[in-house]
Length: 200
Image (cartoon, rainbow, N blue to C red; front, side, top):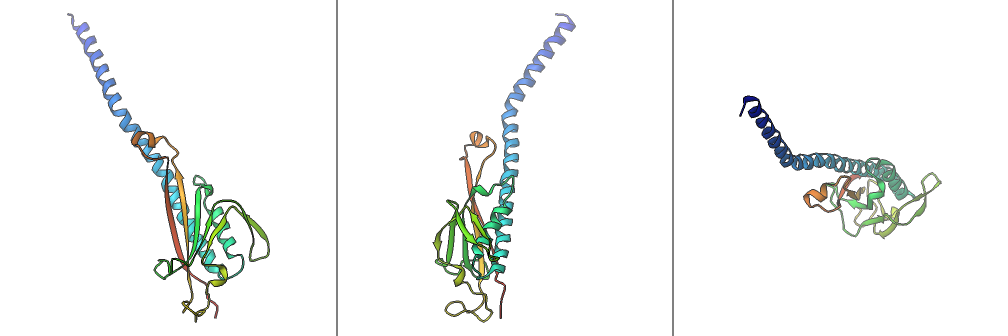
């Protein structure tokens, strides 16, 4: 066998070995790549929902006991969850009375809106708005909230802290779940609490 023939045979073996190595490494590399992309989308959704919850809690503290306060909260959430996250993936919103550390004051003091149907409500400025939510629990209505420093009687010995919890389902945007056996989505929630704006 001449030297040039031996060199050709070595090159063929080297090419075959590289192809086999690539075939072994490619699925791992592709799965990692999909994981990075999916993590970016999921992390964006978590940040977006957390921001929407914090902003809605701020609006809730300012709207206080006024009629239409819940509309302001829900409209805020709708506008704050933006692409690539999607407000249509919100499952429900809890508006609840909270302790100063953020825990619910009483489990029953909670108003829940599910993202089904449509509710037309009146904003504090008198305008009407339709929000894609239906109230399913009314344990903490606007009129029962306390924004008076000295308290409002009963268990409201001082001004209320109000919390907003958003439940959200993130649907995977890449085929990662087919590679690693995940479901088609993940559900999480984020909540924030603010002290109500006081009146004397």
